[in-house]
Length: 90
Image (cartoon, rainbow, N blue to C red; front, side, top):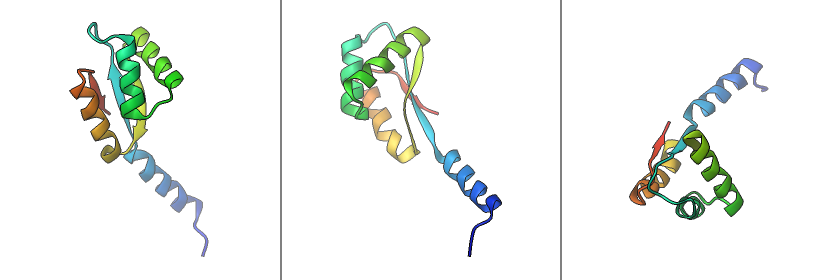
């Protein structure tokens, strides 16, 4: 039995709705190196990716550093907050 396009689209929407963003905000406290190190350790970024995200955070005030479901992002958000980095899940 094949799925109709409508059933497929419905399943895709359900998957996308469950996807959230881990947002990190700029502050005047943490250094670039500290945030880069945290993104590498906590979010498993490659160093260049962490550096790029840190620059976006600095110049735009925030950056979505990771996408995923709530269960995957919540421990990362907590770990960043524990390091004094302002982060939220949206």
